[in-house]
Amino acid sequence: EAQAGISNAKWLLQVRKQQLEWLECQGYAPSLVELREALSALQEKLGPMKKKLNKHQHMRLEVRLRAQAKEAVSPLAEELNGIELLVQKSVAASSTLDKKEVTVEGLDNQESQWNVARKMVASFGQQIDKRVRLSQGPMREELAPLRDRAKAARAALDPISVVLR
Image 1 (cartoon, rainbow, N blue to C red):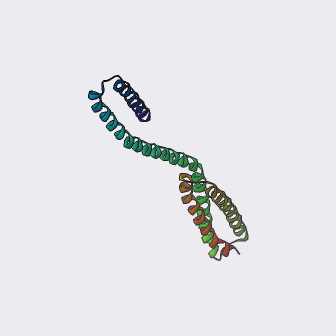
Image 2 (cartoon, rainbow, N blue to C red; image 1 turned 135 degrees about the vertical axis):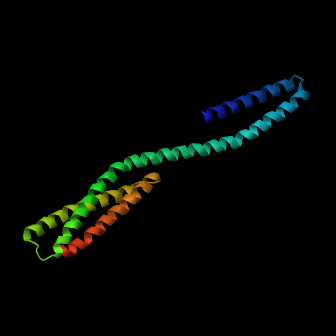
Image 3 (cartoon, helix red, strand yellow; image 1 turned 90 degrees about the vertical axis):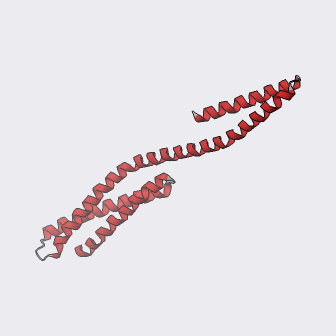
């Protein structure tokens, strides 16, 4: 709306200038010089206003892009929450492996749970890394914390692999 207003004001100033030029040609020059100066002053004020408006338009675009990025990252964040929960369960279950009362069945169960968690973390990490490489701007900024969380989940699983082997 503001952009349309500025465009209309610019057009109106241009029309008034043309009318002044026509009137000057007709011999009404002395009283119109002041009007010409006033119109020029208004045109000079219009320039900075347009620059200000453009700045706000870019800001609106950036806010919209950031909101779209958050919306697009939301399902990935939920998926990562589930993966982190699985990693926590695997880490908690591995704490019982240090005790001497571990059965072969319990060890197999823990190893299968660890393998599932490891595969999910690896797959998610690759997916996030690929998206970070391909994205830019707000989307990349929104994906960066997810990549860090995936790396932390992978790091939490590493000590379990030592215990299982």
